[in-house]
Image (cartoon, rainbow, N blue to C red):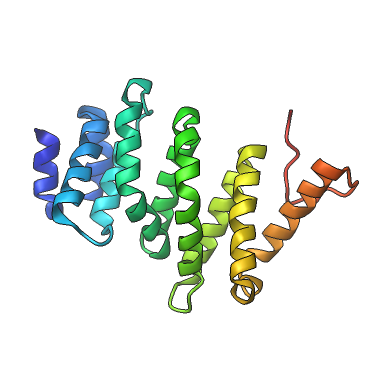
Length: 208
């Protein structure tokens, strides 16, 4: 009931209270469910800082396995809002942190990665529009670098997303900050699959 009260008066809830008090005292998944319900009922078009801060706070604690089905539903319902937040310089970093938390859970990521691919591509297209800040673009690159370093499966996932963007939006891609990252990742893949001797220093060596 407290989580519902929190969201009904969402405008007066502070960031500190959301991420510090709520996860420690109340049910984190319950808060996230209440946010999900609020978003669906209110039919908002995008997250404001107060919304995404509550979701971030609910993810401060470890995602428990017996709540995976609930978290997957929450992710499916809110993924559009999370990824749109990547285009906003004020909240793009917290949006990236939330994506990292969801993707880091091994069992959740098995369901999340396939359903997120097209959304990721759409957001890349939006982020490299003229009216989007450089902060948002730098944040996206940092997110890709982080995911790439989580292992070969994630590296391949990122590679396919950026490759698709580069092929469909070549001119915008060539002007973006993704070019060097993509070149390094492509060289790493050639070394891995075809045995080329040169491994770019930007790509960390992965343990088998």
